[in-house]
Image (cartoon, rainbow, N blue to C red; front, side, top):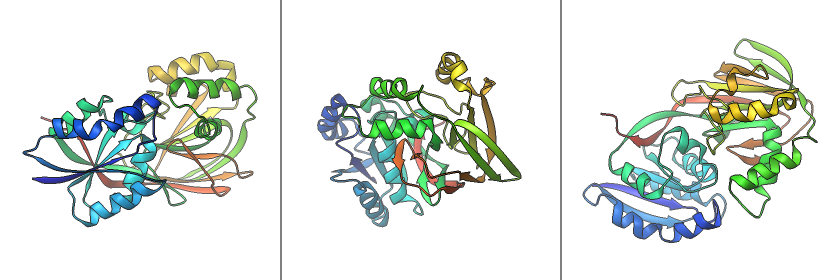
Length: 297
């Protein structure tokens, strides 16, 4: 028998998703293999609570801790688990669910639970931006502005995300950035810069189609300041997994880099807006965490 904890964020995702979480404990007990797992179920009560609970479960020697929520919940749980041998599991019940989608974890809760019954742990990378942990992406520019507005929206879901994009896209002014490190010294005026450990923002929006969480590097995606000229094509490429082929996009791969900005500006960590210094050192921690994925035969 292995000890497994489920940390459920009751407020992430849409209203429908939040309602589904209330029924999740029953679904867990019905679906989880009782011959394999001994479950413990807890709900978060405030921001950062998942960090504290995950850290405590790891200290107690739990075999796995499952983040039930979106990328923000996953981020908190990983922050609590790093440095331990406790594996991360994910039941994706947030908004974008980018990290889970990258790992091919089923979006439907019952299927994700069934996957846990036949899962195996693998080691994956995570990133640090001035020592703030990210599992999927972080970045600055237009995507950080949208993350800020999305966080303040009363409604969640893709439609709200898309509405925020339409509202701000034509008024946004690209900024000039300086990137230095790993043999790189580049000044670039960009619509956005995404530092990608995983391949997407969420919602299957593949901002870094070739990114891997097991290569010890990040894909740095620089979108041209002239991106609006090709906005329709870029949107299609984003969901088709070919945005890196666009001449409006440059890709750089590096283990660590320093981003120097003219002024402090919006920045996001796994889709959540954060206050950051003007200059940001970003690096990948190779094989930093264990995560439960579909068993390979």
